[in-house]
Length: 353
Image (cartoon, rainbow, N blue to C red; front, side, top):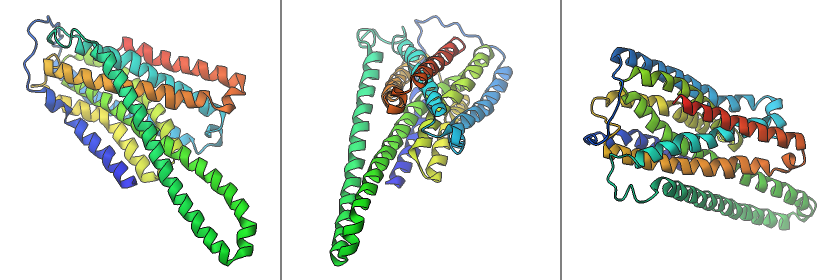
C-alpha cells in the first residue's frame, strides 16, 4: 500500500510538470490590449535564478521546520504552541485559496480572450471549486473508511488467532485478555488517527503542488524584470508559510523517513521546477492564449476547492473542536488570533504578487 502511495505522488508530480505542454501551441488573443513591460531580459534572467534558489530554500525550511521542532517537547502535538502554529498555518492555506488562487482562476476564466459561450455565461470558477471540495470530501471519507475497515479485518483475524491460542493455554487467555482488549482499543484509535492524518497530508500536498507548478511556470515565462522582482519576494513568504502548514500535517501523520523525505522534496522542488520549465518555454509560451487561460483557470479552481476544504475541515475544524481547546479559553482565543494573523499575513502578500 505504501509503495502505491509513493508511486501515486511521484506520478502526479511528473504529470504536473507536463502542464505547460498543453498551453504552448496557441495564438495570443488579439482583442485584449496587453500592457507588458519588456524590461531587461538579462536582469529578468538574473531574478529568475535568484527566485529558484531562494524559493527552494524557503520551501525546504518551511516544510521541514514543523517536523524538526516536533522532537522538542515544547512543540509536541498536545502542547498549546503546536495548536497556535497549526492555526496560523491553517489561516495561511485558507487565505492562499481565497485571496490568491480563486481570483487568479476567475481572471483566467473570464478573460476577454475567451469566447462568450460558455465561459461568459456560467460561473465556472466557483462551480469547479465547489466540485473539487465535494470530491475531496468524498475521497477523504471513502479512503478513511477503506483503511479503517481493512485494519479492522486484520485486527479481527489477530484476535481470533489469539483466542485460539488462549484455548490451549487457558490461564494465559483468562488473565491477559482484558488488558489486551484495552490496549487493542487504544491502538485501533491511534491507527485510525494516523491514517486520517496521512490522507490529509497527501491530499493537501496535491492541492498545493498544482498551484505551485502553475505559478512557477508563469514566473519563469515572464520577461519583465519589473514584474518578477516583487513576485519573487511574495513567493518566498508564500512558499515558507505554505510549507509550515503542510509540514505540520506530515509531522502528525507518522510517515516513515523515506515517505517524509519524498513529500518534502516534491513540495520544495515544485515551484523551482515550474520556474525552470517556464524559462525553457518562454519563447513559445503565451499566458494570454485561450488554451493557456482555460487550463490555468480550471486547475487553479480545482486547487482552490481542495485547499478550502482541507483547511476548514481537516486542519482548523479538527483542532478547534478538540476537547483540549474547548476547555481552555486562553488557548481558544490565542488560536483564533493566530488564525487571523495567518490569514492576514498571506492576504497582504496579494498586494505584492
